[in-house]
Length: 267
Image (cartoon, helix red, strand yellow):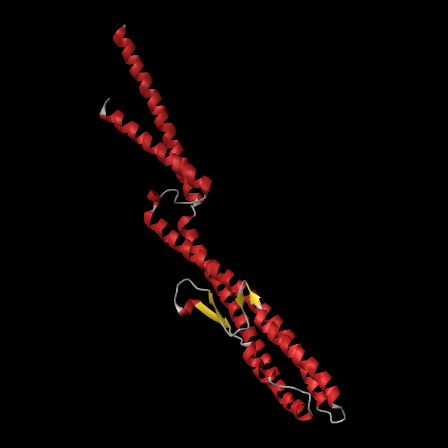
């Protein structure tokens, strides 16, 4: 085989491979269909993918934590309702016109409601995690293990807030009047705790929105690296088809010429 013929065959083989690659890129819509197409670009895309996955997971974590805070707030709302009833009972018991027996009946409800508030604090959980025992929840919202990627929420110690009420009794006028001050402080503490939960929930929402905003430029960067330029690749495809047809025509013509020479030699 002559060097010209070998060169022509090699050129045709390379062009067919390039033509197949163009088909693959246009069919898949991506510029990098194999690591050899752009090793550096593929490495960058892998890193971008990892960050996007982490940010998406961080947003989901924020959502889970927000749900936990909603559970905690609902429980505190019930405790707040209990504190309103306790104030009403203590106010009634402070009235000097009631008998000790009547105050005793009021105190029974007072003690039962106080115990119910304690039970709510001990039993309020989310996915097995106690929400009102004083322990905070650390939420991973960022992409690394630093404190800047984490948010601590919760930390309401309902038992501690109730400590001033557990020793209170309204079966006497003095006890009822002392209980009024304790209940007022407790009610304010519960309201403050609910406000803290609401602020934490708002922060989690902002963190999730920040992650969502960060995903947009990352996806755009990945697209610039990975997505095929359809117009450019279509032009390459046409050019390679023309070369392929040209190589096929030259090959046919060469075969015909060789056959003609062979016939003349044999005649």
